[in-house]
Image (cartoon, rainbow, N blue to C red; front, side, top):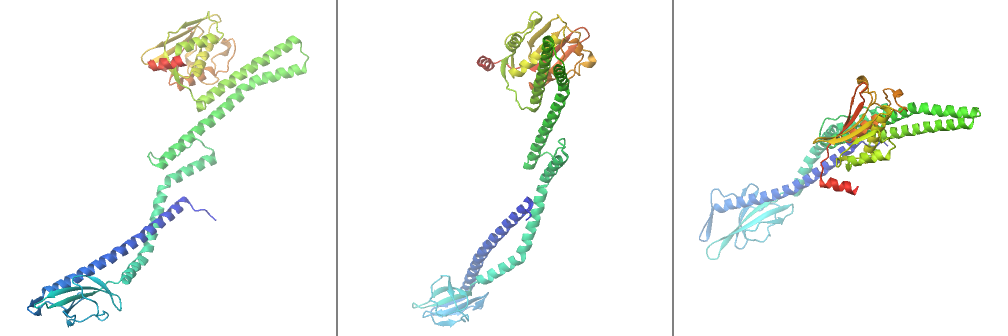
Length: 459
C-alpha cells in the first residue's frame, strides 16, 4: 500500500477538523435557534395579549371589547373566561385541551394532542369580588421542524463546504511546503550527482524552512570542506610519500640483493631512518593542517604570556643559542592556544636557521602596541625574490631547496599561516636579495587585566 504524503495527511486532518468544527457550529446554531424561537414566541404571545388587554374596558360588573380587540392575531388565540372558568368569548384551538388550570401572568408550556402550546392567563378584577380571566394561547415552535430545516441546510451546504476546505487546505499546504520540496530536490540532486558545491539558497527569512535550508547549506559546506580536505590530504600524502617510500624500497632491495658490509648496512639503516623521520614529519604536518581546516581539534584559547612561551620554545629546542638573538619583553599577554602558537614559533625559527647563512644569526623580537602584538623572526640569508613571496604560503612550495642544509616538505609556512588565521591574525614577509627575510606574525592585542594575570599564574 502506497504511503500517504505529509501534504495529504495534513489536508485530511484539517478537513476532519473543519468537519468537527462545522458539526459543533451546527449544534450551537440548533441550540441558539431553539432558544431564539422560544423567546420570540413568548414575546409574540405577550404583545398580543397586552394589546387586547388595552382594548378591554371594565365598568362595574360589565366589560366591553374595543374595536381593535382581536380574538386571533399572529397565531395567538385570545379567550375570555368567567370567574368560574366558563368560556365567555373566543374559540379554543382545535388540539388544545380546555382543562388547563388558570394561573395569573405565568407563561408556561402546556402539552396538547399534537405538539405543545404556550399559555398565559391574566386576571381582571371587577366589582363585588367578581372578575374575568383573559387567556392567550399560542402554538409552541416545534423542535422537529427546526431541526429538520437546519439539517436540510447542512446536508446541502456541508459537502460543498468540506470540499472547499479540503481543496483550500491542500493548496495552502502545497504552497507552504514548496521550500521543503526545493530542499528535497537539491539534496537528491547533490546525492545523485555527488556535487557538494550546490546549495539550496532559499530567500532570506526567519521561518522554519529558511532555518532548515540555512542549516543544510552549512552542512553541505562542511561536507564539501571535509571532502576537499580528504582529497587534498590523500593527494598530498600520495605525492610526497612516493619519494621517501621509493628510497626505502630501493635501499631494502639493494640490501636484500647484495651482501653488504657492516658499514654499508649501517648506512642503509641510517638512510631508511632519515626517510622514516621525514615521512613521520610530513604526515604529522598534513594531519595538523587537515585538523585545523576541519576544526576537528578546536583550539583551546586562554590568556598566556607570549614572552614566556617564546623562552620555553627556545630552551626546549637544540638551537645554536650563540646564533639566536632574542629581544623579548615580559608580560605581553595574548589569547592563544599554547600548543599551536609554540608550533608556529618553532617552524619560523627552524625555517630561519635552515635558510639563513651557515654561521649566520637569527633574530627573534616581540613587541606590542595598542592594536596588535607583533612577533618578528629575521634571518641573514640570501632573501626571497619578490615574485616568489606570494607563493611561499602554499603547500609544498619551496623557493630553492638547494640553499638549505636539508630539504623540507614545504609545509611549514602553510601551517604557520593557518595557525595565524585561527588566532585572528595574519603573517607578513619582508625580504630582498642578499638582505635576509623577516617573517612577522600580527595578532590582535589582548587587554592586560588582573583576571588575565591570575589565569596565567594558574596555568
